[in-house]
Length: 534
Image (tube, rainbow, N blue to C red; front, side, top):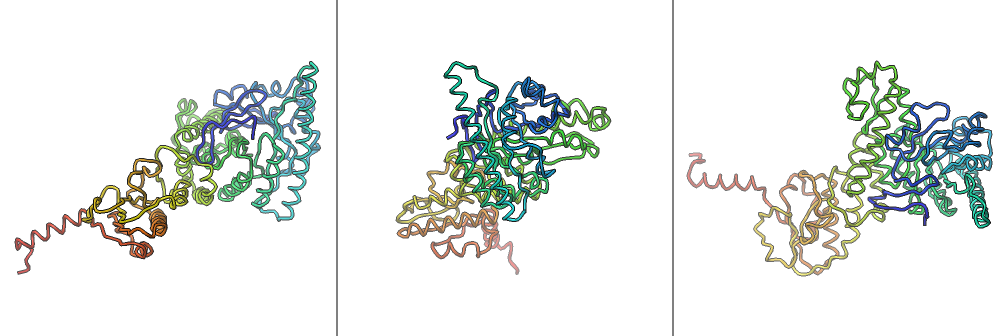
């Protein structure tokens, strides 16, 4: 149980939380803008204006530059960066992944992070790239775990010493209360990610980052990213905040938050600006190809595409726009969690790119786990796509079918349209049929999730799911006699869809209202002789 992270609201595996750090409380989910100590596109002191509550920088870069190192040790990290709020520092693992080695030991970087007053320190883990051999990933993970255990011991020893000093009347020293993050590694080997998460949880790390996923995002391998996150989350303490290292594009925030990620770090706002790239929640544009600016942030309100392209400070303007869009999406996600609409937002965002659509399918492959996290009561479910049929709410209903005890004569009919001639009063129980759930007691029609707003044109997957649940409900109540009225919206589906249902109950056609009117008119005309062939 985390003592520094309070969960306020939940939706799917996402949550709004309050993270307590030495320099203040941070509301999550949120993004930590990356600050390069050597190159600042935007002054860190301005970051709060965009919505940033916490920043991240690189302790190894500071450690490696004598002038930066001396100032940081003397005046502290916050003075060096020029930001009075919480700051997290990476340890040099990124440089290790790029260059293969760094000139610092794990215990040295931990001591340095404490000395400069980092709020959240990170050990020198081994970031194992995707698709390496299992033996390589296992070997790297072993080294990472040894370093994590060392870092956890060093931080705990410092905390114990600080408590003893306080009891003796000594003043608190910079770094005494530094939080420590335990990165989760294992490449794309999901069992290793799962094992790594369990190891980190067992050592009670304050923050749990999921590392070495940037190559997956750069290659648009979002489906693999979903599975890596899920493998780790399933074996983590659910009360501990999770940081997705290197995730900085707002297009995928809703998806990652739905999987239970709380913190992101973004260098994208600056890196993309350097390359002339304009971020939106649906993807990225080259500024040079834009005729219009599809945004109303302060930067875009003050410029046209043409004027921004020609601006001498184009890079800074782009970076500012990118930050505004980034934090706007974070606020939108928080509101979605508050409203119980996070999965609707995730579905919307995932339809912005083909590989994100695959990621959405992967998300719902984990519906059994999501169902355990997802609140049982919300407002209204919106069926946004065919994949909504795999949502955790639908899975939950399938698990609870055995709770219904039915006997006698049972009518299953559409909620609003019944022209079959069968009357509700002639049956002991009346159930409504609504895809993707299936049959449920009519008394629950106004209750979540059966008050769902569904598509007029039922999708094949939605109908199959609903019929499967209905067959299971019938089989669970063998003492009842079921009659199913096939709604007019289902007429376009062939007989094969209803094959299993017809084996367990009577199926009655519910004629299309327009066809019924046409038949009556034709019969009337025939009677009057107007359609006679004679």
